[in-house]
Length: 319
Ligand code: BDR
Ligand code: CA
Image 1 (tube, rainbow, N blue to C red):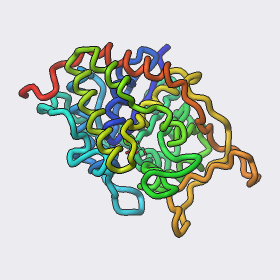
Image 2: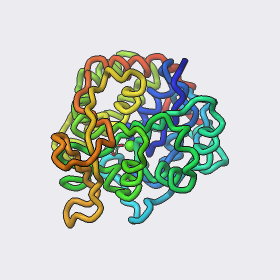
Image 3: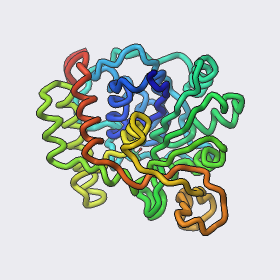
Image 4: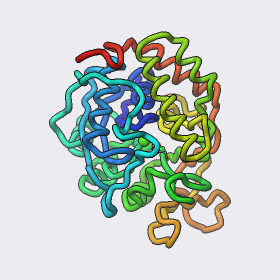
């Protein structure tokens, strides 16, 4: 039976590929796509999720907008990486996929309580929606099978020297999730930087020859230019789809159990994930921490997903 899951995202170039993988893979039953403020404002992230669903031909999956700012801090976006729109690169027409009327947190609560099986949550943006759900509706906890999140790092960060973007934007939300007692898997930068979009990967997308694949090429080309400008890294890491891939096939992403704490007060390290890989603190394990990606099989999965999506119309075609 397909694994029921909800993707909570902030598209975002890598979130866009996470949407395509989650919608296409037959091992998953994608119940909803929810959006959160992060890479860009909530309005833009939600529009982008609808744009991605439209060009990928993903219909029938509700898209709902969630929290428009972190629990405590002001929102800080990543327009240096994702551009003014949050999804710069391809030309998009007007999306035909509608916006659900419910708030993302309410939709998630309802889907969890209605579903006969526990549901997997895959957050690929700041954890504001998930933390709000757990804080305001603790009764849903038994209906969550696991939370497989992209965020954090066993080493250095990308938003600050030790803070990864999704955690550093909303550290209080991340702290609540890591301390929730639920099964949490952390897909951090230490593993996502193994999934580099090399020219060979771009060529595999281009060879598919579909309008959707061309949109992916445009997305990856913009993303690569931004990574080269900001980090001196021309082959950008495709972070978010790795969390989806871990749900599809856990053998793709090797993990170890470890205690993970979110730094809330450090003068220079607020938003860092402190991962006790060698069990020095005596704290109990609270997460599976990803360490290694089977890179070849990952790209086969992602390229195969894009290949299997027909797309409803070309990016840039008139509405
Ligand atoms: C994470 O931050 C965002 O920019 C990406 O979409 C990804 O979720 C990587 O640090
Ligand atoms: Ca993201």
